[in-house]
Amino acid sequence: QVQLVESGGGVVQSGRSLRLSCAASGFRFSSHGMNWVRQAPGKGLEWVAVIWFDGRNKYYADSVKGRFTISRDNSKNTLHLQMNSLRVEDTAVYYCARGRKQLVLFDSWGQGTPVIVSS
Amino acid sequence: DIQMTQSPSTLSASVGDRVTITCRASQSIGNWLAWYQQKPGKAPKLLIYEASTLESGVPSGFSGSGSGTEFTLTISSLQPDDFATYYCQQYNSYSGGTFGQGTKLEIK
Image (cartoon, rainbow over all chains, first blue to last red; front, side):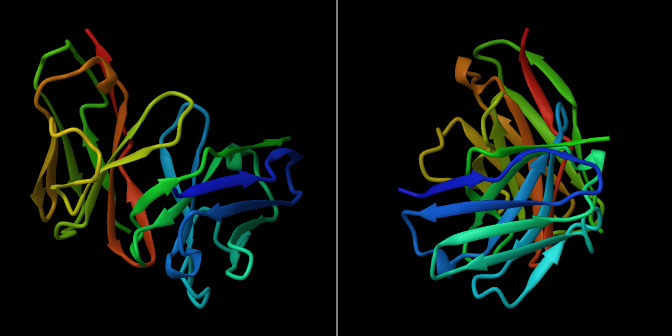
């Protein structure tokens, strides 16, 4: 079955960097767009970034554009999110989510990894 | 950017009730609309896509309708397991998706 396991979350000071990873299994990773979605404490869901199946196209929410970079390694079935210049408002649980085909439609989710940015 | 607005924000209902949640898009999104269910401390779960297509394994008591800018999620007869927060999401573009702010369905 589809499995997505995030890692790399933690507590970090404002202005610093953090790199999240998502290990995928149970499906053909290289055939799916992959996404990061976050949820601040007590708040709703916010789409963060998408990378197409072949890694050639990447798109970001305005709130993270220029600071976050999504990437993937199809040889290792792994998705990454490099987060630079972190802000307190980036505090959230970060979910890795599989896109259905190349759509930004999330049909499988990881359990999430928490990121806390302190001032 | 496309904005998604859900109503109500909170809904109190009883087991067996029929409930409807509304989602409005700031511009037409065709039928590129999904609904998710999220329980506390858990990842969201896809319920409905393309506005009205039930995801595999989702109980038939859930249904979706609408197109363009107005969409609804209906639960025909609330079960104890249905009390959760529901989000709509547009996926009209390959370059990103937008969620509604969520509707918390509470036990009356």
